[in-house]
Amino acid sequence: MATARLARNWRRAISVLLAGLLLAAPAFLPSYPLSVLTEILIFSLFAMSLNLLLGYAGLPSLGHSAFFGTGGYAVGLLAKYLGIPAPVALLIAVVAGVALALVTGPFVLRTHGAYFLILTLSLTQVLFGIVWLWRRVTGGDDGLPGIPTPKLPFLVGRVSDTANFYYLALVVVGSALLTMAWIVRSPFGLALIGIRENERYVAGLGYPTWTLKYAAYTIAGGYGALAGGLFAYFKGFVGPGQISWLLAGEGMVMVILGGAGTFWGPIIGAALVLLLRYEVSAFTQRWVMILGIVFILTVLLLPQGIVRLPDRIRQLRAQLRREAPLARRPASAVSPHREPSVEQVIERS
Image (tube, rainbow, N blue to C red; front, side):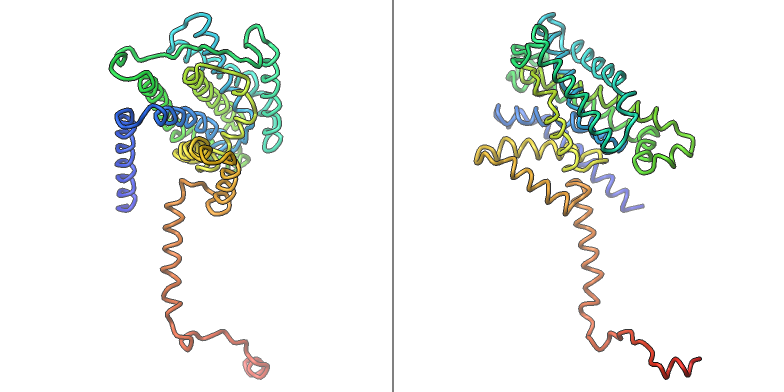
């Protein structure tokens, strides 16, 4: 009990310290690192929305970029052509992501495992083709440039434009993560974990497993579209690449690398992937190969993700402490097990 309370206090202290550092980041970070941090926030939200499917419900999706791109195009069209304010545009982007999930969910959720992964990939490619060919609306392969960047009015003139949007992204992503934490810790989130472990057993207990997975798919679509809308504002551009299955694959790498089925794992994975992309690529063009090596080593040594590294270290230390007394015992003190001879067996019988 005392150990659990101490661990809880440590987590709270680290959370408060992290929140303070994020709030103070524009004071000590130049423009470029602050932009990278903003992108990490956005992709943390994207990875956590995918983690709701992959990590909690056990649904490996290669089509989550469809929601990301839908939110981006919704924001791009509304902001560029209609001048809709950012809060309303982001809300409409979430609605568009939820609507796409509601329409595609009954088709993709008829399958599971590798078939679910292939079907979500196929639907994403269909949407990619529509965006690519519908040039009059989406701009085709040229995309939609010139999306105006929103600003927090009370910070205009006080901080730079980069810091202004950083605080906007911090507020939106922070609010989304708080609601995500409530979802995964609710009975609904626990039911999703049960479905991931043994869907038949959960169904035998009377839970509507298909409906729960449909709800998780829909919620994840809304969060993914919100991340896509923020990214469109951040870049001032949205294109077909934001719907590509490559982005969905990158999101899966973030989730698995950080720790699928954990709350903080996708955030760690998103930060690591983006830091490798921007920092390592400054020294070599083979940063993808380095990312692959890191991913392979993580899967082999830390199959539960980097977020479980402290637990793994504690396990190794406990194992070494258990083995140390045995190693110090003299060989004569160890009595090896000897098989009884034939004469002894006859005498006992």
